[in-house]
Length: 229
Image 1 (tube, rainbow, N blue to C red):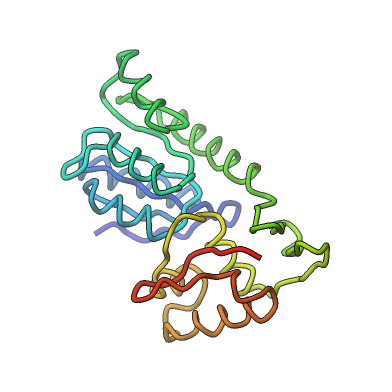
Image 2 (cartoon, rainbow, N blue to C red):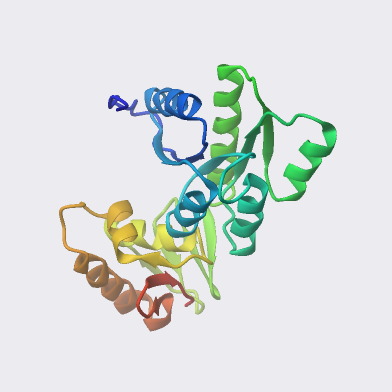
């Protein structure tokens, strides 16, 4: 078991780590936890694909040589499903052709094993900054969603300020516009895990009441995805 580490308050970046090497994976989980990151882990590409499509992350670290689904194939599948989260490919394959293949598959960065811990942390911080800086104002149909002010600008120019929970729910949906999120995943990201999943439906109702019925789309039998104004 990996001991829980009290995260530093300076960073609340959420990472997805897809790595099949048990020793390396556990070391990285400890490292990132000590740096204040929240980390989800997957031991193979299939699990990585499920997490990448169902949850929102600030950055992903994906090993290239994975069981079930190869790391580059996983990355290609995520990009085809409109998951734009920045990705660092972590691999033992360091030839120029391998680096080019990783970048062409949609990775923002590529780090070869063995690596220096300080360099890995610096590259992840850079990915986080890139994701944060590029996503301060998100398109929402013909409107805009400002993550800094928690304000939605409607197509007619009107503006609506969201509550804290409304903001968090809409942020998760709009930062991954092509994803369908289950109620369980949305509850985990936005609300207290002890609350019933129906809390998600309640806040979807609040968002629709403020912004219109189309702002959140229902995917029957699955959950919700971002809509438009």
